[in-house]
Length: 89
Image (cartoon, rainbow, N blue to C red):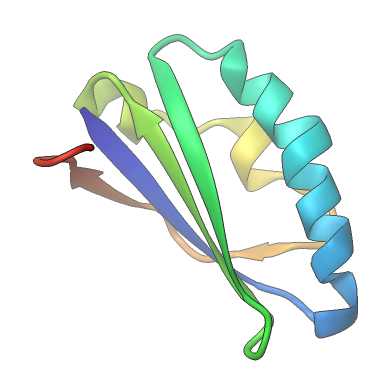
C-alpha cells in the first residue's frame, strides 16, 4: 500500500470551505478512482494548514496525478509526496 501526502495552506477563514470541498467533492471523486483505498484529512487550525493522506493499493496508483486532487478551487496545494505504507492498523 502507498500514500499520497498533500500539504495545503489556506487562509484561516477558508478552512470550513476546504473541509466541505474535501468531504463533498474530493472524497466522492476519489472513491471512483482505481486503486483508491481510503483517506484522512488532518487539520492544524492554529496554522491554517492541512495534510491530506490518500491511500492507494499500488505505487503506480499513488503516483498518478488526479485532477480531483490538484484542482480544488481556492486552495494552494504543495507537491505531492508518495510514501510506502509499512504499518497500518
